Length: 390
Image 1 (cartoon, rainbow, N blue to C red):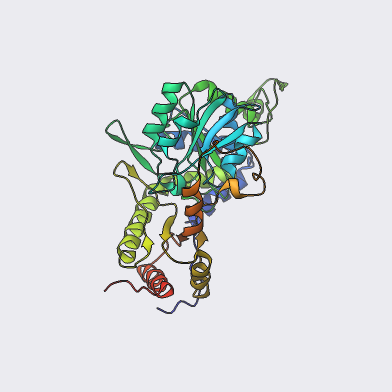
Image 2: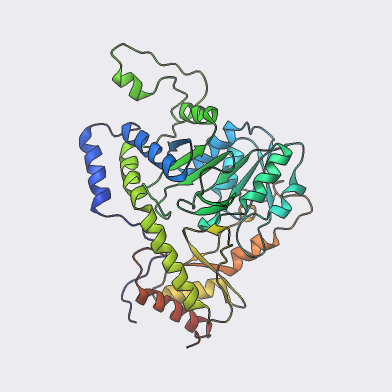
């Protein structure tokens, strides 16, 4: 196959439907946090099966508010993974708390529940687990540990819109939530995008009320209430808040994306199956594992390399028009976290470090054709010198 263009690692699915939604809001005259945001929140809550959903500016701000709502503060400890985008650990530090890193599971990229309990101390205030790359973590075990020790569980579900987990014998959406709070991202590389944006879901009405207060500078009366009132209203600012709002333009796009999410996830699952079939004959390539209790949205398709140089393979693919990304980063290896007391004393993050160095995220978007999948698989086999079996 001759590819005269580059195959991107990701590409959002946007067309005239999203453009029309944005145009409608722009012409309405109300473009900041307003009726479209409220509608998006209701529809997202209904989709995942959560009593409450609160839209914010991005998933990082969502994580910050989630940790703040459960009382994480100065010098508290939050058990999480280093093997995640740096926003996960950063949100802990925004609260003045200490991220306590544990390693990932042996056959995937999510937190290893077997290591969580040993990391608990009297200063542990939360467990922050990640559904990495859209693959649900072993949430049942994490939640059980949290409940047994009276520790809240926050889900970093940035990548997991549309992912599902088998919970008490039923398939349920990530975000129901199964922990105390779940946080989502709508960045362009995610399965649902609003350009940027985030959402918090919870069963706790007090948490939801705090999210809504804090996201708008701690303002006691929202703009929508003042705008619709026949009486003059003076707002107050009873506590410190933030400018973490989502715009109505973003929310209108998100509502269209949410309607399309089932078809998007179905298409991504089909592409993931296509990759698994095409790559199974290439020696030294390990395809991702989906447990029987999880259904990924396949936000990304991440392979492990055995006996090959990650950077050289990525460069060779790029030279042939295939964009990739290295495996998920580790916060503890970055300058912002070096020489800080963040990991569990005496523990190893060996699996996390190996995953970063030996894994590659391959292109995956709904728009990919079978011919492009063939080209990626065949080129990878050529680069590795291990052609797929006929």
